[in-house]
Length: 114
Length: 116
Image (tube, rainbow over all chains, first blue to last red; front, side, top):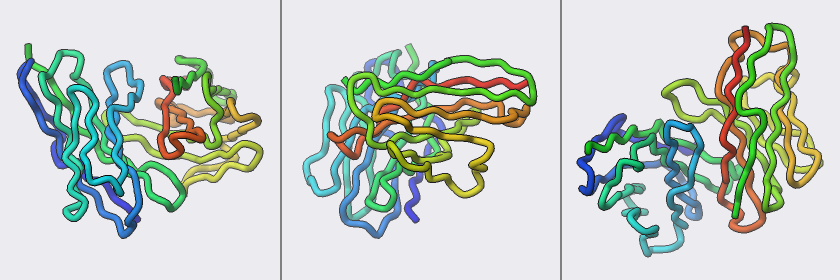
């Protein structure tokens, strides 16, 4: 079974600074997808970024980028120029071939200091 | 695009009653919908997966007679909590996945259920 681990329960960053959230996963599959979702206080899950495992190029979405290291099974999220609205829970998720369901990490609570 | 709605957003009910939660994909056809439960300060726990026109697949430990799921169309899935009890109080979230990108789930805003 796949597992997803987020080793940082909480992180804080100063507004306008850069922060990196860690995620590691365990799988025996070669084709899969990885996601970062954001859950603000409203509790609406928002897709931040996704990465296809067959692509070597790291995905980027404006201020959000990932460092995807397939061999190390690592998928970190970098948030540049942090804004107050970035404060939220961030969940890393894995979607493989078996069952096509998401496996979530435990989440990282990000606080942004003004 | 890829908007998922959920109704109601809040529901308070008496113990023993049944509650129905609707999940709709507004601008795409959802081949698969998922139902999750989330306890405070915890991650999402998958309850069941439903495909349009077929029976839902429940995760281990989830009572299918307690949590009835119907996926009658490509845009609508419903979760009915039958004979609700206080321990069923939780935050329930649905998600939907369409044809493209097939591997991406889009989430509804969630439903807070409080059983008195």
